[in-house]
Length: 583
Image (cartoon, rainbow, N blue to C red; front, side, top):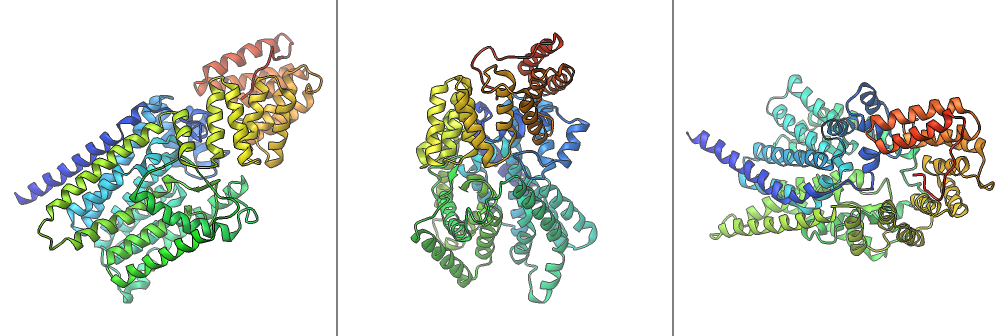
């Protein structure tokens, strides 16, 4: 009877965690896709939009896609399944991410309770994980499916490891390896998990003794090997596309300084989650010297205090936080951000463990302990309100980037992306104004030059547009400026730009860089062939572009290509009737 009561008790906690998470994330149902990586992952990716086909599944396992240099086939498959089920309705995609977040919350509660036997402490940590506003970015951003999906396999790996730790044998070890492999196939940053398992050996599994340290390390070697291989693949892939900042651009001193500051800033946002933004600009040049010195001092003092106090949960929680952040703390700089809210999705659990078990121990003999439950309830209500507010900023491109500009300084990415949002609505002057603000902050930002060129091209200012495309190509070879320059040279009769052979050359380069799977770029190549009088090639290429567009549900683009193909069949090239952009 008592056992059935305990099961009912745990079931009610799981229901409460689920309902609280649903209430906190309800505004997600009104949110759109955003123009920041969602295109690469979903809305402009023909492989993903085609659903679970033989070609798309093969691509998921064999490609490092364009701007996305991770090898994460499970993430691609999850996006493909969403497109299979929901098409491009953002509600379905967001709902899937929310379901993974709920599953991660329940698994976190289960593994903590299973390891420690502490029901309420485990529930508090799970609730903080579920409801904290720092988790919004991982759930509300479709492109961050990899975060919640890898979190799911992270929790499953720990669950399998608990079972293995109870009775070590190969039959129980293999599920650990499998779950870790699946996690690595969802997001490479799961590489730190073998070290977390070693921490869990110390507490709360209590397997850690100096005499068996060699065994504990050796049993992690296969896991570490898998993690190391994928880390190397990811690093060289990102370096190959220029995602890893060169050492001479961001020196080791600056990267270390930013890492120390970020560690403390993340803790600050855990305790006071205000001013959250989709992008935090990297200082790029230098930080005030006092900032990294003070932050390093705080990290050293806290580390020494944790060791001095000697509570195992403090050591594990602190090292969990520090260690899980290592791949994304900026020592190897990937991208342009100084830090990102999504990076705290799993590391913050370490801080939640320290706080929950620490407060429980401090108040163990206090006669008014029930007040703590009321205070915790109030904190969770505040977190729910904060989370709901943060989700509303993610409603669309305008709300997201306008908020980012309010809470950050020199945010060239927010200016650029807000400009793109205005441009998508046909508000070119507003878009150009935001692009120019972005370039005043960072003159060498590749995507702003591409976007500003596109906006100027839409206004018929072809010479200025071409200048920005050429500048962008000087920064790095990329299909966007190549495609736009090719379109100018193939479809505008102005003798300063009309050059069919050069258009073919540029469009072929763009097709090669985009794996011949972007219908708009194939459309450009078809127009270039037609401009050069190679109409059979134009018709064949346009047909392929139309097929891809139709299979990806891009009906408007498919109809435009069909109209141009009729011209090619009649032996006529396509000439732009007036100022227009080629995205």
